[in-house]
Length: 444
Image (cartoon, one colour):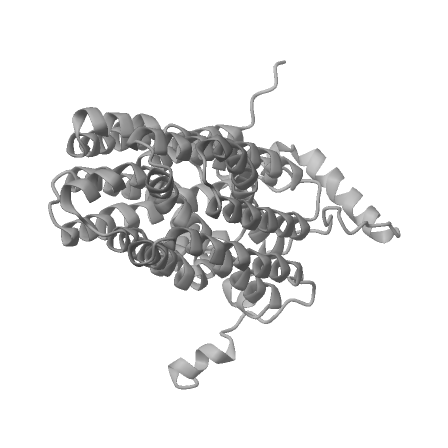
């Protein structure tokens, strides 16, 4: 009898399609709109960077709420709402003529819709369907983002030939016609379909549990670079907030949060201005960057199933710092592909490993809620980085280069911080409101 493909992989495949749409049209697609908007309306780099900054601010504020809704009502319902909002957001975007209208379209529809409809609910679903193979599943899922971003140059060609207004309408229709049907594939937990996590049958699960107990009863040499094989903790939000690892992870992510913002907003304009590239060529370089990142997304996703997640992330942060520093020194188009590879592969690897690390430290039960609260701490860098890098470029001759160097050296701090995180062990903290929250509620 032919063995069926585990349904969790169909969820990953649908997530790849949704992620490719969201990435190519919204996350990296913003760069395709950046240059035409500057030419037509004369909007400054800082004000356009602020669109992404404030969109991320709203996404960060909404993250705990969206995470709670996903954990409690399931990802599919939230994704239908969110992707529907994104489709409408693109239609509205096609009609904007002022920077205020642009901000409103992004904040009220596109960014909020993305929070409810794309990566957060997809990661919650994948975390619930996979544990032993979570790294490779997350890596494949996030390859969808790289796949969509690698074709952003085609979106740029559409904008150049048909205008950004018509391209925005087409983007909205694609979100509705492709994104919404794919959402119907998503399921919250394998138990809802009579299945088990990672596709193991009941006998195998029982046997593996016995093997884990047997392994734990015997002394074993564990090398520092190997994956921790202890059972995964399943903490509530309040338990997670009372651990050292939550705040160390929050600090790490807060430092790294500047990287996605400046990459999606400023890499293409920087290359266009510094190397005098035409619009499509600059977006082609960004597409190559995102395409190269797929190697990191998939490759390090697989590797994380076998190696120490903290060491992997630390190494990736250091190489990203080196990559963005090299970008700050670029003088010729001929070296850009080499710099892209150094920068893009570790950048891509970090994206799925962030979700893997969260599951490693806190488990899957409250994955969306805990992830939402971790994202709140990202907000200062997430919001400010696209704005202040754009401001430097507006005010200083080598402003882009200086901004990239600052971000490069901050990656050293992130690399050190992640190594300090320690996985919670029993006895776990109490499941009650931490004392510092009580101060804001009158001590109740």
